[in-house]
Length: 290
Image 1 (cartoon, rainbow, N blue to C red):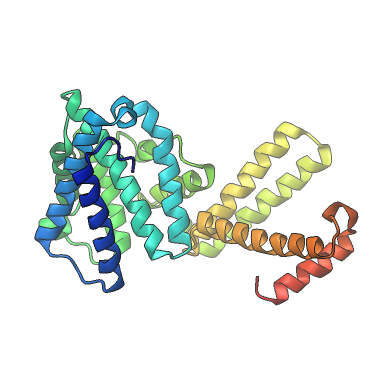
Image 2: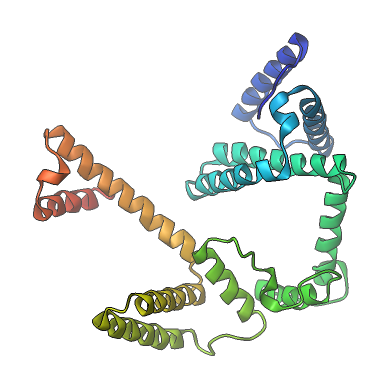
């Protein structure tokens, strides 16, 4: 968070608050409702002042913040993947700042404010949980998800079609998983999950046929179909494909870094090594659990 042009007293107060917060984390206890509300109010007060007094904060717009918001979201995802509670807390704060910032810009445009944001969310949560706030019944998470899709179609200003709520800018793997999940909630799914493997094999066979013909456009299309079917298989076996792929990414990074460090210590370059030599070191990294 950027803090600009605060007077000396407020800088000192902020520093003391920061030290107090570190000490509190060392012996953490749950905050009271009043403390939580006070903390949120302080955030709103700080942003109000920054928006007036800080040149950087003052010039921000929805458009200028957008890419930073995406970056902050991915940084939070990284912390979650690492199960790093300290950085989860930190990145949640950064993301919360962006939410409050967008609401502040909305308020300046006389379009909406943070209260409207909270009211809209509360109304949606109540409307989408009739099994909690109404007379409906849903005793499993799957039944709740199926109910949501039907409720979303009924909402005022809500989705007109089942797949309309899937953001077009989602990364491809996440988007494929979300598309398939939404289709499942309205009954478009395999009767038995092991039936998906026939589809995977079918797509793999079609890909090989196009590879034999070396038609670049059709190869790309068949690769897409194969990826889509594998993501579908992951969903059916309750595996998040994006998490699974990122887990493999991190594993590859660890083993490749081990390989690179090993060659540097020997005063060699990877380009000078044979694939057989690299495979040997790679297997060594694997045996160490990297």
